[in-house]
Length: 169
Image 1 (cartoon, helix red, strand yellow):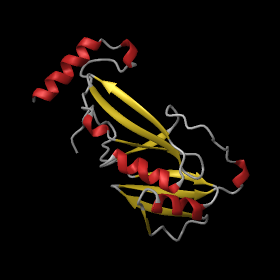
Image 2 (tube, helix red, strand yellow; image 1 turned 135 degrees about the vertical axis):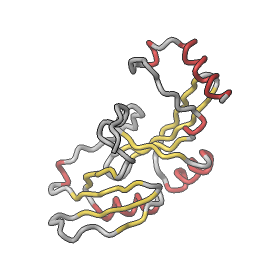
Image 3 (tube, helix red, strand yellow; image 1 turned 90 degrees about the vertical axis):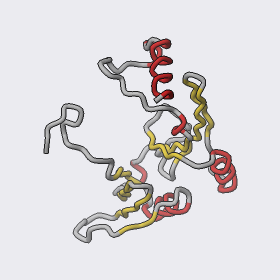
Image 4 (cartoon, helix red, strand yellow; image 1 turned 30 degrees about the vertical axis):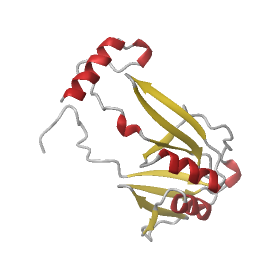
């Protein structure tokens, strides 16, 4: 294994996220029937209730909370809250399906250098935020030799040059 300063812990990929839930059964239903994950075998040595699901190359581990009333209830859909984001094939189809399922959501749009990205945000049964987007239209541009900072402090012309260079490649 060759040491790499860009990957100091030798990471390969995202394996799973763990979510504490009020009801494992309700969360299984949501992640299976709304997002298309499927249940997989969970080690029998665990001495607590939970479930493992898999889809799109990642796992979701659901953990039953001992006291369901201890979990805070989130009501407002805030795109700036913790969330997991999924790419989709058709934003129109996703929005139609969310409406059919009666799931409340919030729309947002990101614009960068003339590229528009649509986003839909909604909660799972426990208030964990899910984002569905068409973010693959936004180029991934490494900040070589720069400090990571908020967009409001980034030189817009430099960003546009970087986007132009990536598009031409």
